[in-house]
Image (cartoon, rainbow, N blue to C red; front, top):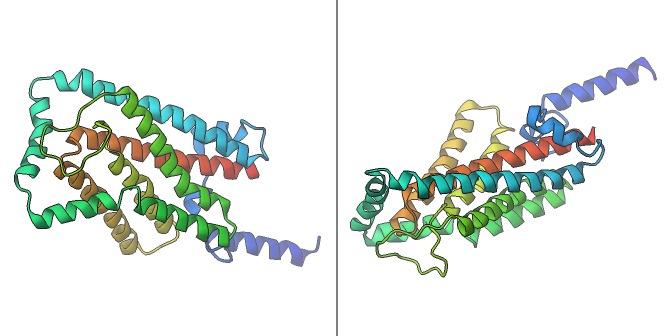
Length: 265
């Protein structure tokens, strides 16, 4: 190999490290070292099998998040709600919001439910898949879709194991399932909107822009959470459970993506 070739290879590698010459869909946050938790996952298949590593990671993430979510739910229903004053405090905010309902707020709460519901989120997921397919970037294609998938699966299992009725207030929605814990809308908003924020800020160096993006993502989740309580669908502790599931699902996908990337090397 000539000296010129070595220099060229080094320059290309350095350029990628600084974001030059990389794919439009390369995100640094997904390419970092997977750390102490991710390295064993990357080595689980003996290396060179990123798809298998990814699938193993999804299964492990689902089992772990479901166990943690169920454990937190049982703690809420069997311990915290039996502590003096907790039940009243958990329901007081919902009653306050219901008492102050108005036409404008009700319409706003509907928007808050829709942006984290079963119509908008699949559209965002499909859009991400299409964009990723155009650039042939399977890791990005899987990131948002499976973050939402792991969240939804863990949420559903939790509702089956942890029985809690929705608030005893006039509700603005009629759902066949009376499962209050955890808040699936809150969890889904974190998996998708925080996931998008994570990807965007990993490619943006401007500090003000990064802060603005995270503020928007966090505001969406707060908006969704209050909308669900306003509509009489969840208690504050249910929302907290949703935050837990959403954060764990998103964090798991970041870890899985990094482990799968390391398995390629």
